[in-house]
Length: 604
Ligand code: ADP
Image 1 (tube, rainbow, N blue to C red):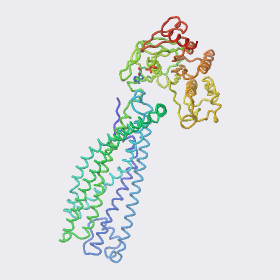
Image 2 (image 1 turned 180 degrees about the horizontal axis):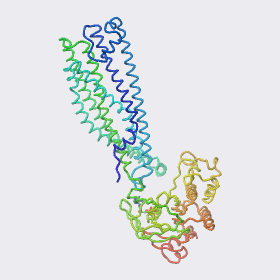
Image 3 (image 1 turned 45 degrees about the vertical axis):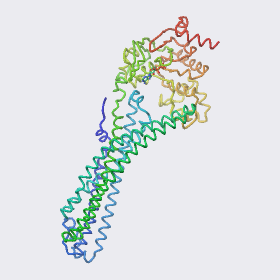
Image 4 (image 1 turned 180 degrees about the vertical axis):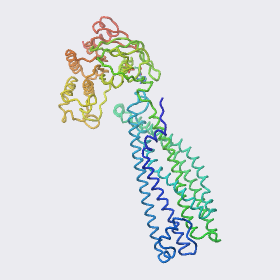
């Protein structure tokens, strides 16, 4: 199994925005310098301009004082100080705004890239992967988890930069002002780091549990909405509601645990930070009183301490969000690590050959075991000449659908060989193969788009003539024409509701439009009434007479449908029970005969 690391995820999405993050570091530095300059300007005025102390020991400050004409000028015009503070505050605000904007844009772009990648990957993973993952859970990974990561990069990435800048600028300044007090001021930092790390590991596991519970809840909602008709029809709202309530309560209590942890963490963190602030205030007051320190230095220290305490306190939030983002990234990389269909051993490694496919199919001792160990097909052998029509009959669960899915390479056969026109199926490129197989599924799926768009899935640039011909052959053209917007009528959730039979006929038209070499009707004809069934079969027979016939597999229980085929394969328990022309099978007194006798009896 290929694996996709968090590092690679970061590299291919957010790190692509590195110049924006680089610019954000620049603006953060500007904002920090502005923020720290304010208390120093205040110190200059308190100690030097209004007092008798020398200019505080900062080269930049000395240059600025000299530039305006020395301390004497400031004494004559103290409002220079006010202007300086206003300008510095504007500088701080403007630079902080730019930082926020840059990081938010970078995060948005990174998130878009990641979303694209995820969607593309989900399109490429095998059917085996999808049959083992709940749709709702995958949706949650693509939305909520992705948003957790986006939020981290939009907000906390900037905060990390700010914290680093504040700390790297503040400590040297504080040390220069008063060594003892500086040591006290940073005394709590190691404790805060330890406390944060302790909680970080716990919050991470709490968040993973909460996130997984949310995924289950999403899956439950998705499944409920998808199956709303069944729920209503069986009057199971109460039951479903109870199940949802249970999941919802579980989610709440797991999330509650995380919130309790966070609350405890904030309290401890704030307590230590405030203790620290209190110590600095008391010690500096004593130092100022006994004359070791000027009042200006004392004010600067308090202001700086407040400035650096903010990111230090913020560190907890950053770590908590980092923990969440890490969990979310893990859940996303798990999806991105799922092998693509062509590399997935469960789907069978894909070939590269693109032979001309005319439709001669041969199953040779084929067996199939599903990834979960279910043995479905065993020793299936029969050949289908190009252009013939094969009926497939068998009880539910005997493996008919599986056999057809193997032909379309939706799952891989475990033993034996399947060839099309003499070429082993595994050697053929999947796309090229599926391009030539029209598969009408047992439960047709239509997208909530127009009829034309749904048909266009088979052949994007089909012209009206081709579209109408396919729809006529599927006995649906007249129905479509009667709709207000004809082929532009929207179906499904956004438009008209089609009957089961109509949906099935649209799906048949879609498959016919592909002009396939192999056509598979998976019980599709049983969903339409016998008259329409006959109409569709007549249209197919017409094509066949014109020498333009695909090899057709018809899975059906209806003997009238099967009677029209060239031969019938009867599958029982994953094995070929009998095989032969329908009229021959009637004479044989086997399983086909039994079904025939039952239905004839019914008709009589
Ligand atoms: P039929 O089309 O004849 O009704 P299927 O081919 O759908 O039969 O199913 C044959 C058997 O394979 C059934 O027992 C079914 O439970 C099993 N099966 C189908 N799909 C899967 C799957 N994805 N994983 C495991 N078992 C499966």
